[in-house]
Image 1 (cartoon, rainbow, N blue to C red):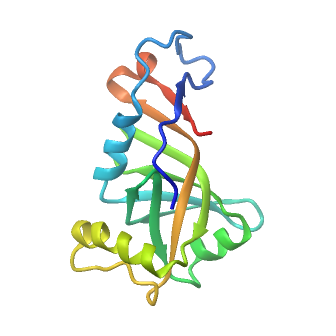
Image 2 (cartoon, helix red, strand yellow; image 1 turned 90 degrees about the horizontal axis):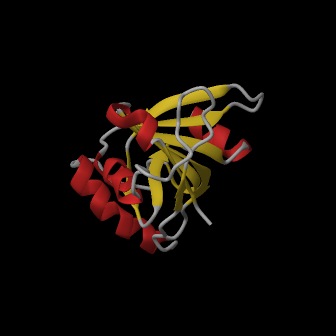
Length: 162
């Protein structure tokens, strides 16, 4: 299990949008985590073997600094991740967007799956996080972006994970 870690906040490189160089107004990581925890639906972006993007909504939970979700073992998402584990997950509220880039890896530890099953069940009752129903993945972030529409220019933030 990966320990929760606080990433380093900085400005994203978004030319021509008036993003200041100053650190004033950067969003705290807690802002992003709140949105990742509270979202009901998420967008998962993977790539086909030929490089084309593939986006699908998924359910999931943000726990201990990672996004956990499941999908059928033969689903397009699972086949894409087997070919290329690099992916992106986004919360459902685009006016308070959190865009997490990272790598997904299948979770095989039965005890960890049982631990994750508790918050998953509380969130999506009566559904359970069941490895018999599909593979369970952990998306570990490398960096994330925060875009707060009301304060876009002053609040645009990029978080880098060590």
